[in-house]
Amino acid sequence: MRLTIRTHLALRTLTACAVNPERTLRKHELAEASCASGNHLAQVINTLGRLGYLQTIRGRSGGMRLARRPDQIRLGAVVRAFEVGTALGFCVDHAEALCPMAPCCRLRGALEVAIEAFYGALDQYSLTDMIRDNDGLAHLLDFSAPIIPLSTPCTHSGGCTARN
Image 1 (tube, one colour):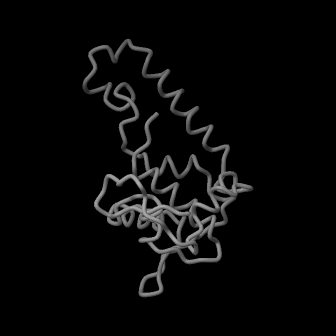
Image 2 (cartoon, one colour):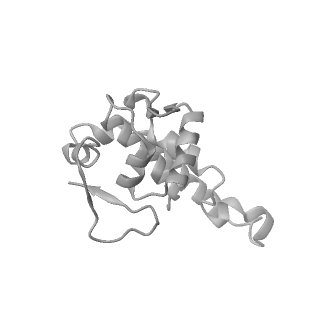
């Protein structure tokens, strides 16, 4: 199973907000910490807001924070929301129109069961499970700490940085 960049960014954004519950995070902080394009991240933040996961605040002192408690955010639900319409497998998504074996192939059913097992496993975890007693993550996502440049250049033009 390969997740899209949007899904990874959604999970990173929610995690960063959960680790910093007392702060309103800014898009540029998260973009730097995630080595992500600000424009790409803005689209993800917008979607998370529309789905009710984030409260977004416009303006000079704006930013984002969780709109729900971390224990109410299930990873499976977030991944499902961002992977809708993504081709999870040729047999699952395109078999009817393009596969000559579709009428007699059993692989499609097996893949559908596997995909549901994947999401079912993610449904077992909440955002709280990702951050609870995770001091390393808390340190990495401490946006009050100074940032240092990465020794390896990132792949986008945003000029990534890393936490101490």
